[in-house]
Image (cartoon, rainbow, N blue to C red; front, side):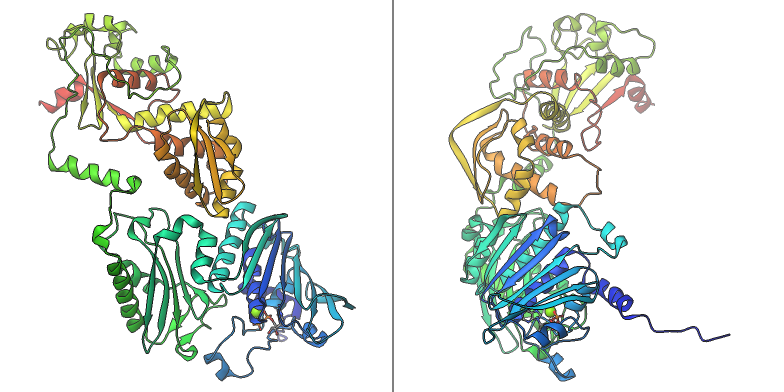
Length: 619
Ligand code: ADP
Ligand code: MG
């Protein structure tokens, strides 16, 4: 048999190698930005089209390349940054493997215009699938402009695996944040589909962080500084009340490079121990500087995973300095109640646990003919239920051998329902003209049925009602808006504004009115009817966080997600006391729903304890 091993042709080898370096448009962005930084650029512009699928372009004012170097740059393992193996242990540049441009050129249409300061004319170079298709002298500003078009044009399988534009754009934005935060002394611009997402002037670290994350973070940052023999640390940590349940803003940089390091992350988290509400994540922006020979960057092609020589000591130093910084800002005085979203459920859980008992609505008087309709805090729901088919289906199942009569509706606010209640399981106490509804542990609404007991989870019931109502507003008829006397203004990073912007039509159809939804300073002049002003920020944050989660495509529609987010934010909670009228209304509205049994997240809304159930307990 003849020999069977042969060398792969260059273009195939290049394509395979490209897979390591270039997984998605964001990888191209990272490599090009890093090259511009290595070229000592002072201002860098990133331009993308269609989330980088059509175009990724980086323009810098760095040192440029000679014609020969421009040609060389696209060869595999061609680099100006190291020349020997020892250099690997004293890296002062982002790049050193000499693979990025070769990889990109193997799987895209690339063109370069570049000129060194000292040259009169620059060079233009066009490359397609690793082949140079054009080269000529051009007039061009000093520096380099690289355009990468039609990524993966020759690797359809890879192209198919790209995510939606919004996901890919988010990846690019994350990459941009990381690079820009590591280099505040360089000015950055980021333009997506002709609209400017970021324009970051050169400035301090703090400026850079605030410019990217939004001015709301400014007063929440605690500075951090520590000099030791092993390393120096500077940066900021978020005050504990800045902690979010969603992924925190967590950034580590080592020698001006964004890194991921779960061990050192743990050092920070453990320093926050006891200061954060349950499940909240601290935010941090921590910059480490270590001698280049004490860090190994060459353990992974993307260079975000690194290895430090003495990780245990670094762990201890980071932990101590975070603790120190937290201590200096007298944590004890921080009011943990401030963030209601984080603290309310926690607080309530605790108070309920200390004294388990049945809480009865003080307004409830079973012997009174009419209840005191005193509530004015009750949430209105904009529609009144009819006895819809949902009713029938519910009750049909409860009492097999009785036909549909009014007594089956005994728990209803209908006054006549009480007439037959005498025959119910719990008579004679309940043989009044009043309805038998009460609240248990400020969590459940209990009502008697002829066939037994109906136990409704108040929070879930209201969620279901609101969810269907919001869905209607989003699809059929718009919701009512309450005009605000003073518009609310909210500061969010551009990236989050973009997410909201994509949802603008939907948000408006449920009652939001925006005065400005273009830049970081969002202004809202109208709110959905039942939404409290204090709930607006947490609601928008949760909508944003929800949009940012990567969900399998098509599992939820935009509209569905928005409705379920809003419903869960507005809904009455466990711990809310309800008067009788409110409970009645809730029950009415619940059973007017299309699908009263389940919440939007498919959780059970109520259970029905039948007489048989109860009887079996007494055996
Ligand atoms: P590496 O960055 O690892 O050296 P690359 O493939 O990214 O490898 O780049 C190859 C070489 O091309 C670099 O070493 C550098 O000399 C040159 N180069 C790339 N981008 C630029 C740029 N924007 N300005 C000047 N030179 C560049
Ligand atoms: Mg490089």
